Length: 632
Image (cartoon, rainbow, N blue to C red; front, side, top):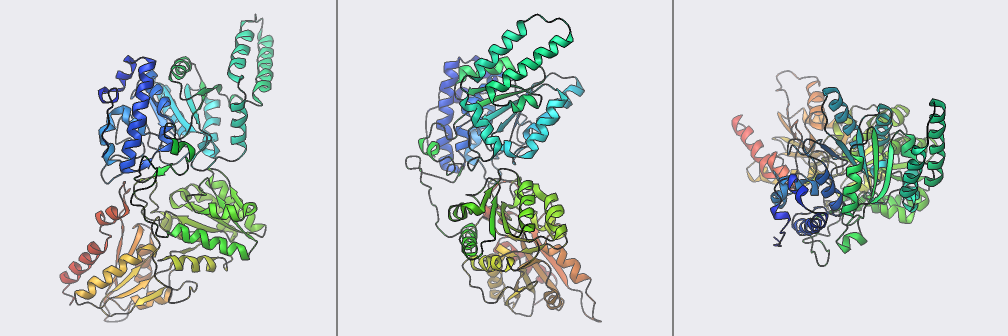
C-alpha cells in the first residue's frame, strides 16, 4: 500500500469543512485528492480517468451545496469517487470494489450523501427531476443537481428527461461534464454540437452582454416583451450555432473551465438560485493530472492494479479472453461475407469490435450510448439484406429489451447479439452483473440462445449463428477462454455429452464448464460415476437430453445466471412434464445458480465461492445430498 502525506485531505471530516477553505486551499486539496486517487487505485483498480477529470468540479459542488440536504445525482456513477472521498469514505478505499467493501458506484444504502443509485448512463436527469418534483410537492427547499457526461448525452433517456424538465419548469441544475470522451470517443450529432459550442470562445461573454443589454430596455406591454424575447432568440442562435438546450426550456451557461476552482465557485453560486431548469456546461479533461491517463483515457477508464511510474498493469495475464476469441473470429467471418456488419454502443474496445472497426471501417457503426437504437438499427440492416452483429455487455442489453422483442423477434430478423460480460462480472457490482440475460431472453418466441463453454466453441457457435434466419444471442463471460477442443459439431438444439455415467447427471451451462469438470473429478474420487453434459443451447431445450436425464433420480444444473427464469428452472419444468413411467422415481432437478437477489461487488472467484458455485462447494452439496438420501 502506498503511503503519502495529505495535510488538507486528512483533516477533512465533513463537507462543511470545505466551506472554511479559501479557493487557493481548495485547489491544493484537489491536488491531494488526485494524488490519493492515483495511489489508491494503483493498489485496488477501479475507474481512474473519469474520476481524475472531475476532482475540481466535485470539490466546487460540495463547497457550494449542502449535502446531504442538497441532492447530487451522478450519471453512470463511476466518476463518484471524489464525492465519496469528500463525504467520509476515504478510509474505505483500500476495499474499493471488493467483496463487502466500498462500491464503485453511488448506493443509497451506503451513504445518505448518495442521493440516487446509478450504474448505467443517461439516467441522472430523469432521476433528479423526480427528486426535484418530490421536493416541490412536499414543500421543501433543497437544491437538486444532476451531473451528466457528454457521452451520456448520446443516450435517448437523457433527452426524455431534458424535455420533461424543460416543460415542467422545476428548479433543477444539470451540470454537463464535457470531457469529449465517454469510454470510447463520442460520436454523432450531439458530439458535433458540443464541439461547436466549445470552439465558440466568446459565447458566454456575448450571451451575458445580450441579456444585460436587452433586459435593461424599457418594456411597454406584452407584445413588446414577446418581441424582445424573439430578438434574444435570434441573437443567441447567431452566437451559438443553435442553442439546443435553451430550445428545450433550459437556461444555458458555459462553457466553463472545469479545473478552475475560483471560476467554478463563482458560477455555481450564481446559477444555483436561478429559478427553473438550468444547464451549466463544464469542460474537463479525462485523466487530468496523470499524464499516462491524459494521453490514453480509454486504457485508464477502468484499471486493475498498475505501476504508477510506468502505467503498466501488475500481475496481468495475457491469456486469450472470450472477447478476444469473438473479435478475431468475427473479422474472419466478415472477410468472407461482405454482408456482415458490426454495431457498438460506445463500447468498441470493451467488446473487441475495435479490431473489426480497423479492418472494416465502412461496415462498423458506433451509435453512442444508445442500446435501443442499436438494436432497431440492426433490425433495419437485417431487413435490408445485411447480417448485423450487435456486441453489448449483457447488463447493457437490458436497456433494449423492447426493441429486441418488437423490432427483431416479432419479425424473425437474423440479428446476432454477442453478449459480453455475461454471468458474474465482479467488481462493478449489482448494476453490471450479467445474470439476467437467460431469464429475459428465454421467453421471447423465436430467440435462439447459445452459451459456449470454451473459446473454440464460441468460434464454432458464431459460424453456426450466421447460418440461422432468426435472432440469436451468444453469451460469454468476462474471463479467460477455456482451451478445450470441440469434440462434436454444433447442431441446432443439441447438447454435448462430455462423459456418461450411471449415478447422477450434471448439466453445465456455458462458462461453468471448467468448474463442472472439476466437480466431475471430485465426485469420481469419492466413488461416484456421474454423467456430464454441456448444454450448449439454453434455448431451445434439448428434447433428447431431457429424455436421457429422465432416467436419473438426481440431476444438477450449473449456470452463472439467476436461478429465477434461468436454464435450470426451465429444465425442471420440462422434465416434470415428461410422461412418468410406472414404478419409476421422479427425476429431481437441482438448480445450482445465483439466488433471487442482487449480487454485490467482488471478484468472480470470490462471488462463486460465496454463493456455492465453485467446484468445492458444488461437490460438497452433491455429496451431502446423496449421503442424506442414502445413495451409494
